[in-house]
Length: 416
Image 1: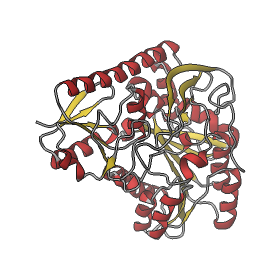
Image 2: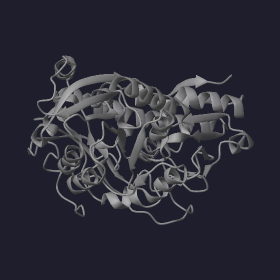
Image 3: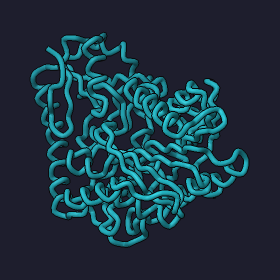
Image 4: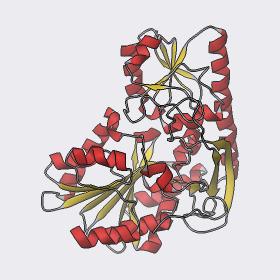
């Protein structure tokens, strides 16, 4: 069924359906962070970017202004395999799950939002059958070309039931950084429930909403992220669909993530980690209006800090470049009103982004090797979640340049 725009995230919580949404941070009108431009003067649309929190279930969310087909289905630029640290994370997960679940060629694994096959490739190498669900045609084709069976569809109740009837129930469904990307959270979870059998484990990974609050990670707010997950919200969202959250693991990925273990209701119980995570979120202030007010102040301070730093660099005659054309970087740059006059270029390893221009700022995206020829004095690292990996690349390409992070404040992380 085709998705339509609703008032979810604006007046109604897309998780629990309550109308108890509290405004947290208004980032103004911004372009879609992953909608890269083919030319510097190409026209672009901007939409409100405004974070709210549900006081009933703790789900963070933004409004719906474009359909998911526009964001994800056509020419999606993000390739998971570009990050070596993320691929290493996937390999470790595949090895662990294969051992713990006893996976082999008689069982199979489904990944939702399987991207270019980065994770399923790891399972295949371990002798496990796989199936990918990836709505972005261009990215799915990369996976198929590498021998990974991939369906270009959005997961929902109908699709989950259809796949289950055709190929059976997988032993494992992995959904990494995708549950936050769906406007109709109920239908997505219904798809997981329909695809899952009595013995299926569902693992969901997403950045921790509590970390966003505590570490001022406001740049992870963009139109692609309709929701911001907490243990509070996930437990409440899955229960009406016959599923149960039974474990919560803390992960270092993306600046601090949770891995949610979800199974059919009645097939297990909370191992204690769910209750601990929910209690921690409550005591740490996930539902505290005062702490969210402070978060907004800190976020605006970060934006002002970047704008001031760029003025100082310009006054000093320094040459500033950026590395990593990440969606979070576009939120940051556009919140600060950064333009191509202030930043020479943005280097990125994704061939899907190279030769294009960042939305909003219109900074040119180039292959990493072109960074050396630009001879920057300073390089702003936009994907702070993989900063060590990128700082090492910058040091190799342009050893005389200083590397910087802007979130939560301007900080030198490498260079002379």
